[in-house]
Amino acid sequence: MATLPTDTRNNGGSLKGIRGPILTFKADPFIVSNEDDCYDHYTDGLIVMQDGRIVDVGDYRDTAPRHPALTEADIDRYGADSLIMPGFVDCHLHYVQSPMIGSYGDTLLNWLNRYTFPTESKFRDKEFADEVARIFFRQLLEQGTTTANVFSTTFAASVDAFFEESERYNTRMITGKVLQDRNLPDSLRDRDTEESVFIAEELLKKWHHRGRQLYAVIPRFAPTSTPLQLRLAGDLYRRYIDQGVYMHTHLDEAESEIAWVKELYPDFDTYTDVYRHFGLVDRMSVFAHCCIVRPEEWDVLHSAGCGVAHCPSSNLFLGDGEFKYWEAKESGRAVHLGIGTDVGGGTNFSVPRQLGEAYKVAMLRGRSLNALRSFYLATRGGAETLRLDHTIGSIAPGYEADIAVLDMEPSEFAAWRLKFADSIFDRLFILMTLGLDNLNKATYVAGKKVFDRHRADTYLYAADL
Ligand code: GUN
Ligand code: ZN
Image 1: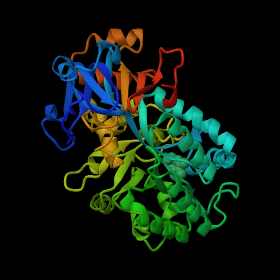
Image 2 (image 1 turned 90 degrees about the vertical axis):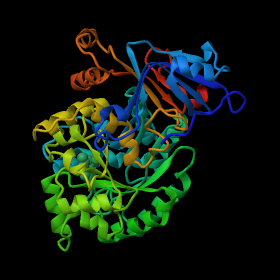
Image 3 (image 1 turned 135 degrees about the vertical axis):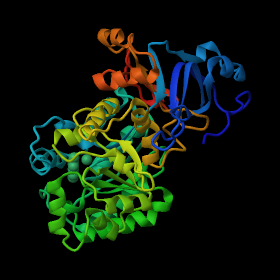
């Protein structure tokens, strides 16, 4: 896994530290049977950072002496009312739906037509896109999310606005132009299929690996692309997959959607087969939802090494299917699994609040999801889903220093309630179940504290720190 601690005596930029209770994951609790092997918990820990990366972590007592150049003034301290964790990873959401989150939903397809498409049509206007991107990033950072796999929309302006704001915070983010050339209003539809993929490639060349930004080829879902667009999207993806470009789309979310795919693509046995036929199912592919999946589809997703984003609050809100994590993680055909808020189908920006909903969705089928597994999915599991688990999602030497500081006493009542809980995972379970909106107090991105609830400038861009 992680590399060894770096000797920081005489190389690199200045050192910074974060001291306090720390929790991080190092192995998959869906696979490893001994839970204690899956995480490290330090009640008084120290993270040492340099040039945006973690160089060391451990008990304060053991770690501090290894870094004599790290002075007390360089260390941010958090007490027993805090928990320092890797920043959360949101594996699927739509920043362009921030202006219509919470719109009345009856069915997925009606909700898309009535609220989503008209809102996304406005992103032709760069100034509007800039404003939404600015608000959106504040929401993510306030909730402790440091990496997200995001849908923009049809227009290049929506992609530029997103990446420009991400660059200001120096966040590691993924987006791309959404490819959609049929079954949408003219105001949103790609009018020229070949040109749409050409624009996507231009954006890819502009943004992929520029700083921490990463590009995804994003056909919205099979019903809103012609077969030609899916084929060209597949060709583009395959040309760049070795450079770490993603493919991101929706799959098997609701019965009505699956029936529509069957109508539009009658020659294919399954929805997954449609994507596979066009070269879209591969090791950098991420599929959102996957609520109603046939066993043969799980086999295909597993064999290709795909990632899946479970989006429980959205699935409940839109009345889609019920995600079955035990199918996704079935031994011998498991997929990489992470959590998505799916804003604006999801009803809030908080990954921990999704965990409370994921528990309830599982319980509908008599399966529970404990806090260890849940917070794994929210951090390291998400990083695996995005194939970034050597870079983000853990607090370990060599990893990028993206960190959330949770408030373990987010309300007077929560503080009182937690007095009756013992272990760290008992306490985390209670917090994810209470579903509070202010669970995060500070967020570090590449070692810089870009969000601090108690600072006069609550949000600061990296260049201002
Ligand atoms: N399927 C295709 N587009 C969308 C979308 O915007 N939201 C959700 N939840 N499902 C989709
Ligand atoms: Zn979505």
